[in-house]
Image 1 (tube, helix red, strand yellow):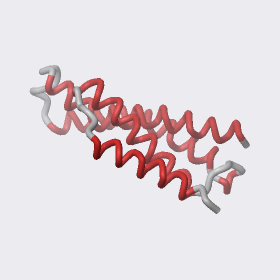
Image 2 (image 1 turned 90 degrees about the horizontal axis):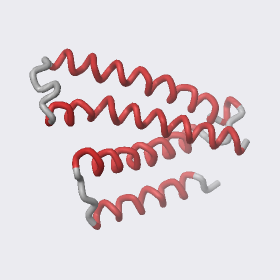
Image 3 (image 1 turned 120 degrees about the horizontal axis):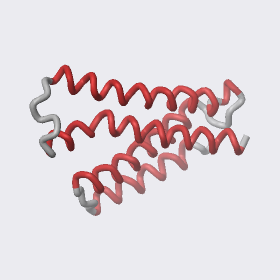
Amino acid sequence: MFAKGLSTIGLLLVSNVFMTLAWYLHLKLQEMKVISLWPVWAVVLFSWSIALFEYSFQVPANRIGFEGNGGPFSLLELKVIQEVITLTVFTVFSMTLFGTRLAWNHVAAFICLILAVWFAFQK
């Protein structure tokens, strides 16, 4: 059960790296003037091609982790875990590529998310 939990979290982490790239990499590439002349439909196809990899990790993560398939997590627990991973990956991405700085309210929001995970796992 522990291995399934770790596998699920690892797959969700990889999935969210691809998701973040699919959703936001085009903004950085546009800023760098790499794809600034691309039409929107080309940017959508570019992002969609990255999102395919996201699904390739997301779907197995949910199948392995879901308690209905012998995994350790309920559907709601899977979603809360996924959201925390998403925001963590996005924060690292935005700080690294865009120079975003965390303020006190961002830290407070993360504390609330940690509490949300704790509450989600209370039986």
